[in-house]
Image (cartoon, rainbow, N blue to C red; front, side):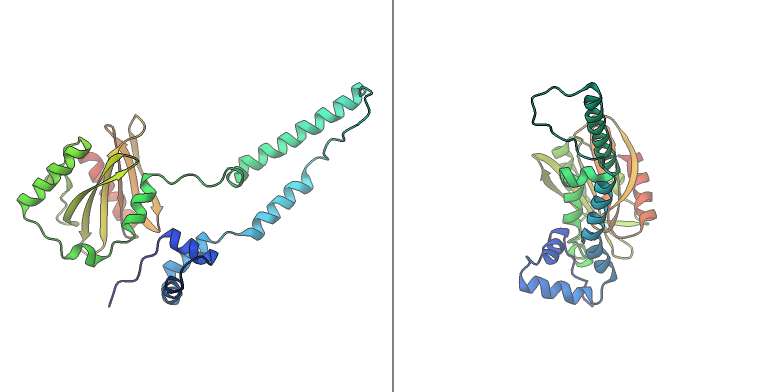
Length: 252
C-alpha cells in the first residue's frame, strides 16, 4: 500500500482559495475522503470569518461614541474639552484591549515563517521510502558527518547522533536558510517513521531549554545551545520526539 500523499500548507491554502490546479484539487479531495489528519489540517487552515465579524461587531457596539468635530472657530469650553479628551482616551483603551486579545494579528498580518517552519515543510514531504533505500558504511557516515560539521562549525560524530534502539541513521545533507548553512540529519524509526534533526547557527545569543510544539501537523521539539539552534521533527508521537530532544540536547 502506497504512503499517503503529503500536502504542504501552501497547497492546502491554495485549495481553500480555489487557486490550485485541477489535478492537485482532485488529489486533495481523494485524500480528504480517507485521511482524518488531512481533514483536521484543512479545518485548522480555514479562516472563521463569521467569528471575526462577530468579534468586530461586539467591539464596535461597546466602543465609546466618536468625538464630535465642531467646525466653528469658537474655542470649546473646558467641559467640552474634558468630554472630548475622555472619548479619545476611551477609544484608545478599547483599541488596546482589542490588540491585547489578539486583534493585533489581524492588523499586522501573520508572522513571517522562521527556519523551523521551512524545515517542517521540507520534512513533511518525506515518506518511509524516501530513506529506506539509503545505506552507508560506518566510514562513509563518519566522513559525511565530518563534512556537514565543518559547514556549521560544530563537531558532530556518529556516536553523538546514534540511538540504535530507537533510530537508524540514514544520511546528512547541507541546506541553507537566509544565507546560513542548515544541516539536516535524517533517520528512520524502528516503525519506519522519518525523523530529522536539523542544526543551524543561532540568530540570537543565549541557550534555550527544550520546548515541544507541532509543525506541519508533526511532533517537534526545539532548543538552542552553544551558539546553535536545533529542532527534532517527525511523526506524531510527542513523547518520543521529546525524549529524542532531551538526549540530543545533552550530547550536542
